[in-house]
Length: 240
Ligand code: BTN
Image 1 (cartoon, rainbow, N blue to C red):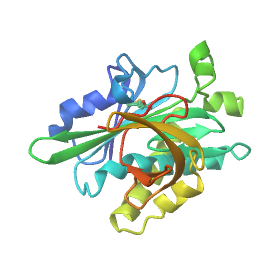
Image 2: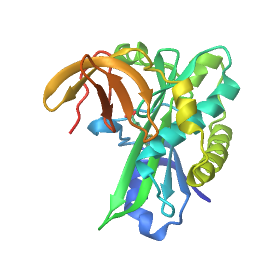
Image 3: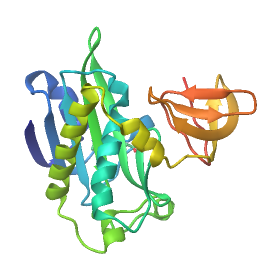
Image 4: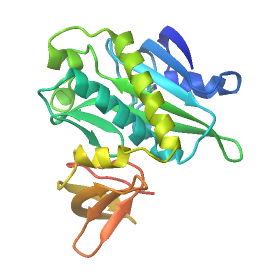
């Protein structure tokens, strides 16, 4: 395991994607600020004294599309130790929620030549952000807002990495309870969700995450399984 720290960088995910050949398995890159932070689906990720880090995995990439669920499970456990009076849950596929507000986003990127050679797991946790834009205030919160104190980011990073390292080893040995635990803390459970399937708008009730990491949605006629993308309670979810 190796840590690299930057004060300012374009994006910790981009750094690892550009330098993966010379870096070792389980390299962690952390920055105080990103000038081109990337969110999912081409969005930008804005930070303000938050925890921004990415992990490079090169060996043992078994079932790697589920790594965003796996790290969400690790981060959720660490947050639950610090925050006991709020509901912390996972909004499939890769957001962590405190009550109804997002506290963490995860961007998983594969680097492939012929087959996938490396995976970069990027995490942005709202740690010390205080002032959100009007649009974000209803959707996002930070640890500082919840705990009413400034958080030591590097202590939190170390806790998360140690937890993820244990959870990753357990996952590789096929003994991880992460899917069961995600279902016990599944933000979308029994909520109506809107998604797009084969160019058609559909609605259904989110029921669970199955053992493959897919969300299962009950519609009038059938159970639909979706393996990636974004699901939203207000807006539309796109599937290739
Ligand atoms: C999302 O919810 O849209 C995912 C956000 C992921 C943001 C993190 S911050 C660290 C890493 N570097 C990036 O450019 N993005 C991820």
